[in-house]
Image (cartoon, rainbow, N blue to C red; front, side, top):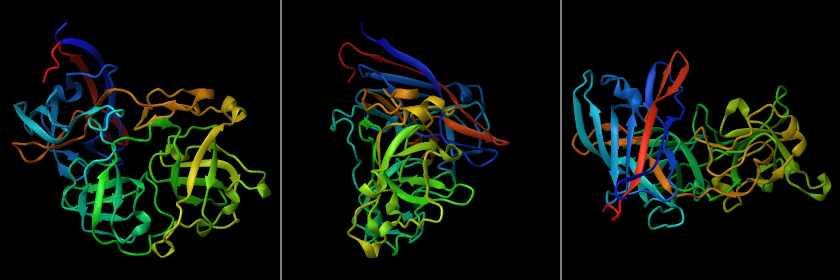
Length: 398
């Protein structure tokens, strides 16, 4: 029947907001809509009953308007959408279209609909730091938590692998990894990087659990077991069994499975401070050497990796920690929990990615997108309450 509502639901906007007394954009939200959709509408219940505010920040820097209703229909360009929002300080309603950060159809089986990578965007330089800053005049589609892949720069040890980003300054720069709640490289890359290109990574490898690149391994007298930090959210849970593939130039070769250590398999025993980028394993390495990230001078080289290989049943059965594979605070589609959380599954589905927002076509200034905002008042972090409904048209709706 024409105009049939296929799916509907609600969610709380996920995402970090480390700054007290601020309201910031959340992270992208992926909705499962089993047969796809020809139209979708998202309503921000939290902001529907609020006047416009001048204290909302997009990417942590630019003040932004907040939409209360968003609409997309088949035929609109990826990342766009219609938005209705309230003027700052009043209940006056305005309308605009989002240039980016709106709606994007998600179909990983069809690269024509959902390409794994965005097109190349130029950057001019990368700093030589443990959390390198990438300078660019175009940050469209980026927000804290986005994943990017760099190429062509002379800082060769940061090229060709994925990095989570933070501290996005609109059309100025973004940071690889981060300073608060993110990983950092064990050491600076070893050289300032020149001009190159970045691409936004739109699709994680379809099969869970995933191998990740290691950017740091630490230990201390207080925490003698190895703490592993990764380039993007690791998504592992307590009880997961992993193995390491660490090049000789990085040190800590004793973590690699060899005949000398009976082909060691490590078990995840903690996600450090609920950090999506660091986890602890049951191998004591305190006093056994240090880890270093490959430098520019050491290229070409392999990158250190952590590879999931199964589940430690004994640890899983006694663990009090949640054993739920998470992405942006939500369970990864199609994954299992508890003792079976290590199961290999295809996470692909049909659906829609709700973006974090971007510039309005008319206003030319940021408008928070259909993923909503995250407030932090007195250290209490609360995401917006969002409602959505999606449907099909008999004739495709285009």
